[in-house]
Image (tube, rainbow, N blue to C red; front, side, top):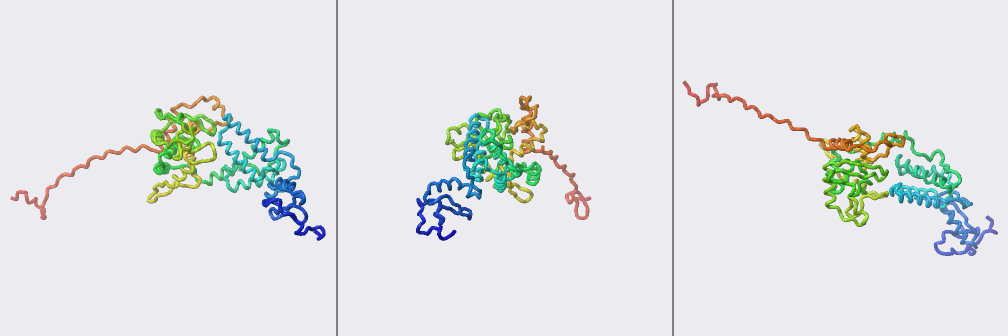
Length: 424
């Protein structure tokens, strides 16, 4: 720039207010250095328009993206607002649970972090989705990564289905779920997520009163944290030893027989149950010492955190050493994995599926016609798992009394009869 067009320091206007984000550049424009590069937003004599332009472009500039000049179209934040409102309606009609809505909310937050709330949906490119996948993959394993990608795709598919945009979003080849091959390889590489009998007994020994009951529900019923944390009292019949409670995640009905140990543990837990703070929690079985639920239908998971402490405290004796039960990736859901694995050995997969509450495959016509599973079949599965965990003691073989050896006549040193004998 020539000296004739440059402004002197004396000519530069002060900032309109102390926190004004731009500075007066010698070219006569308001400017800001972002990511090592200068950007200009308008002349000195119109700082209001310069500020408006900066605020409109800030999200893109600070993210290293080129801002769009034409600002008409569907913004990311507008899409998210409409999308979450539609999901909230599904919660109200009980078509999805709060936990699912919470997962979508977290996903939407990550989309905003990556693309910016003012980014136009039509401006998002396959390269942007590829960068988003890289960011997600840094902190997630393959299964969690696949779930997150699916939720992102559901969000942007909603935009097209709701006619908010006139053409589908293009994701590119990179933004896809991990392949089945990759998932199988990852599953093969990790340790099995299940407990052995001695480990479960060690957990029960290390657990407190309420956690003990929930651990027994995990291995007796295949319950997860949400099952235990939301279990209502009305679903539990301790007199007959049965639970009738649909799975919160899928709504699949479940009827499960309880072991005597589980019934006793629940009774002890209820006898010392703290008073709930929220009146809505008076009907649930388990309440923390603070009077709150152990687990709500949200991403907050107090139960899993407390269970992690029990796992780290529990020890099992292997040979002459005592080993920790804790293994990376082994949490409360490991009890559900264990129940499914051992329950399958009872050779009635339909009954096992009914207990854990798995949804039937869409093409399984037999499930359409099946009106229920007989209680005897359900009990056969839980009895099998019970015998695996608490095997009956082998009957002791009676010991026969030792036969008394015949008494020998005592002799003296020279082989004669004892001194008491008559000597001729």
